[in-house]
Length: 126
Image 1 (tube, rainbow, N blue to C red):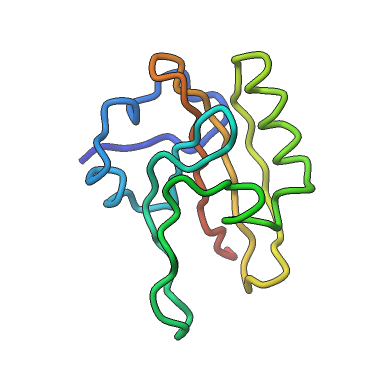
Image 2: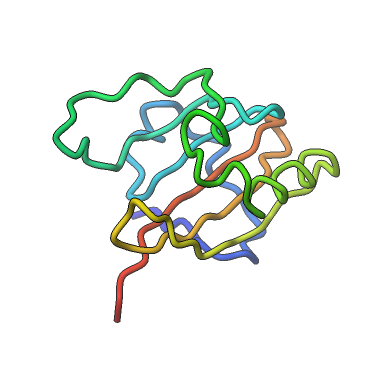
């Protein structure tokens, strides 16, 4: 079993070796973004909420089209700063008004590929 660390101090990024099909099987939400915040790869871990299939996310802007709740937040600000510095590793616990649970958002650089990852994990109450 492969264990993916979900903490800020994770020094290794094994996700750079994953193909699109491998990303789709991760046990948490994962999106690979380009420098402009456009989705290059993703998995869809959320149920459709009874509204049917959602449009594909590839090529869409994460902060404005996919997760608008993050667009005007510190999450987007840290992403932009990390892209500019070519150094990104930040973790946020977020409450999203449309969700009945909080999420942990981890932004991480993939320096070899020149892309950036967004990991989204549901937080459960203990």
